[in-house]
Length: 238
Image 1 (cartoon, rainbow, N blue to C red):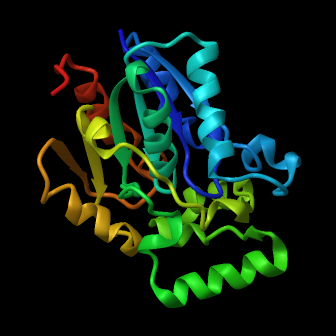
Image 2: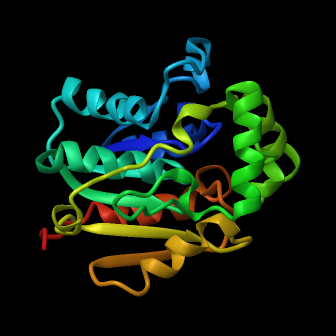
C-alpha cells in the first residue's frame, strides 16, 4: 500500500481527481486530493494574501495531519512548483515525486519563469486589474464535448499572488528523491515544453508518455492510473 497526495494545477480543485481516486482506493492505496487555497471549494477564501508559500503549506499540512511517511506526491501543471516546495520542507516524508505534465522548476524560478514575455505581460496585466488569473479554456487542455463542459463549470480563478513568487530550494537534496515525469503528448501543452525537455536530459528521471491532453486525470484516467501504480512499485532512493 502506498499513500498518494494529489495536487491539482491552476484553476482546478480536488474535484479534478474524481475519476482517478476510486481506482487508487480499489487497488489498495490511500489517496488524498488537496484543494489549494483560493480555488476549488476553497475559492471563497479570495485571492488576497495567497502566495506560493500558502499553497506549499496547504499540502504540507495534509501530510502532517495524516502523519504520512514515504508518500508519493503528485503535482499537475502549476503544482510542480508546489510539490517541489513541499519536498524541500518535508524531504524525509516524501518517497517519490510525480510531475504530471507539470512545471519542473530550477531553484529560484517562479511559475512565470518559463512563460514567454508576451504571456508574462498578459498575465501580469490581468493580475494587476483583477488580482486573479481567469480560467483558461478547457480546449487548451485538449478537452472537448462533455469533458470540456464539466471542467468549464468547475474551474475557478487562480490567485494572482502565486505567479511571480520565486521558489528557492536545495537542488542536491531534491535530486536524491525518486522522480517521475508523466508527459501528456496529444496535444502537448507548449508551456510545459521546457520541463519536458529537461527531464529527458538529466539523470534520475523516469519518463512516461500518455497520448492525451494536459488534463490526463480527466481525459485518460485509466492510463494515468497505470503510471501511478507503476510509481507505487518499490524503488530505492538514489
